[in-house]
Figure 1: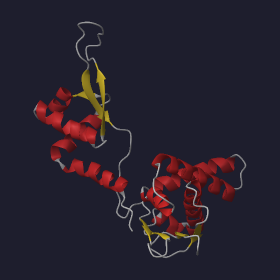
Figure 2: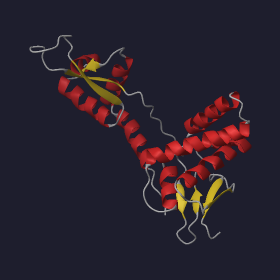
Figure 3: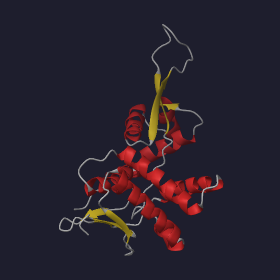
Length: 231
């Protein structure tokens, strides 16, 4: 069974929405402004009718590329001040797509956390393990996975580009993609160790204590796999 990567599909849809030239022009115009802009300002900025600007601005909001806010442009308040206008600004959340999926941001987060822990006096190996465990705790908390056993582990790891596959006959979980491919190629021991700590902590957090998480390098697959308790 292959766990589909809904998060990846959402990112593709967001970026794909910018293929439309009007939508792309509106996104670039809004992004270039120092403050949120109104529909009229956006329409004038890219020279399209207001109703056209409204349609595309709302699509960009739906895709998470813009965020709306409401404000009275006159600066007045109280009776007679008029209704607040709907304004748009660029979303702060980054959107990127790579195929196969790469998550260098997660590796960077873990390693930066580890450096801070090491600067506070922790041994580096221990710092990396603790940082990976914290990242795993955050991943499980944000995912709120459902299902049983390895299906929950797969559900969490799918959002991070691992392309998990559950062998229905043996009950093992293999990870079809390495989210840190280039980084692991240059710093294999460090990155694979961090990866092992992360996956193991995800399984532990989800109560899969009987499953064995181990290193099993098999490029281009991820170097980690999870074996059912009977193995």
